[in-house]
Image 1 (cartoon, rainbow, N blue to C red):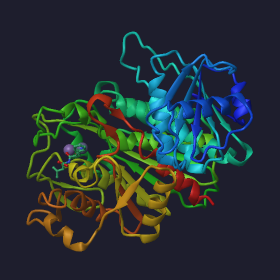
Image 2: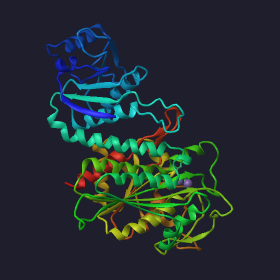
Image 3: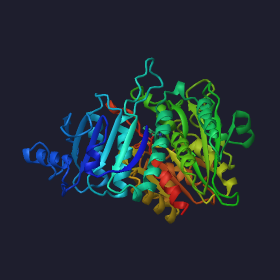
Image 4: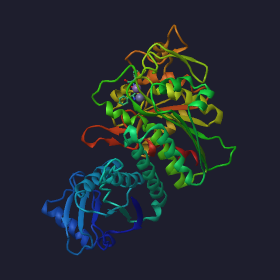
Length: 482
Ligand code: BES
Ligand code: MN
Ligand code: ZN
């Protein structure tokens, strides 16, 4: 999908040739002396369109409107013009014309919007028109190819426009990899996707296999991988936008390409959704894709421990004790708590970069879905500054998260007589006890953990990856460059 930005008032929008012209109408609507304004006034008067109260999810479609250059005009009210209303309106409008062959969409704001409303319009248009084609035999690709954003004053919004266009490229790369079934997204294929990013300047990539990982002593990661015929990969990505001496931010993405639970096997229903268990890894790839577009003066390292979690004669068993790269021994009480096992060794590996911050991103716990649903990702950090920066980035990018606690009392349940730590505590506070486990391996680094189990994909009819939290992470990284 390509985005363009242009200065357009309503008179200009009326002259714009396109398959669909979406006009976003905030309240109050101030009509001009053009045909489009007249059309809006007529429809309101006739009771076909309501601006107050706003009904963003009920767009009015007008075919071949007289005096307008577009094939269809889509009128939608957006009330106070907030990001939420704009997202609703654009999503509903794009879905409403999805069956028509709308190749070029013009989105026109009738009055000057806020920055977050522009982001919402662009990401919602991309989201609603996205189609996954990789595993279809006769792919019917995306119909909507071009979106022109028309604003009363486009120059003012150039920066946010460019950032969002780059974010969309990243979000779509993350969706592509997260949506792929496990047989089309093995650890080796994921490593290939990371390597493919080296075609862009400033990107370096190193991929470690089983031998190198064994040499590093990543016993926890290896234990998860040992039940699968697919060899593990440890992916190391670098984005070098600043001098070598500038400490990087390290992003660690959980890359379980399929999570059956292992010997502690999951129930059959919905097990297929565990192909999404590498969404954290996919979001790291997405962030790097956006970085190469925007070229900020920062350094970023991406670490992806990737493997399958399967039951097998060679698989790790409940009760097994393994030694992590940090030297800490771990009693694996439940082989389905595998995310923390692959992440802990990656967190230890991260120390060598002397990072300014380490952020891990993982579809880690069902408990986090129960706590926060699909609206906000879980945020954990023992560094208030880092937590606040990530929370703020989530708000500006409309990719929301919510901080949960890390009191030491939550670590009680991880105690065991047979190792330094167990990989499982009781059922209560499961998202937090998982975070407490990870915290032990973050060492002296400033560390945060995003549990995206509820936000990385949608179940049901609209099943699919969301590309979250690419927008949040990108916003955080760009703000750190200022
Ligand atoms: N990948 C899952 C977490 C998950 C489950 C994400 C469902 C989204 C939907 C993770 O590896 C897992 O299995 N976690 C267990 C941990 C438990 C055994 C302590 C869980 O949440 O049930
Ligand atoms: Mn699991
Ligand atoms: Zn998992």
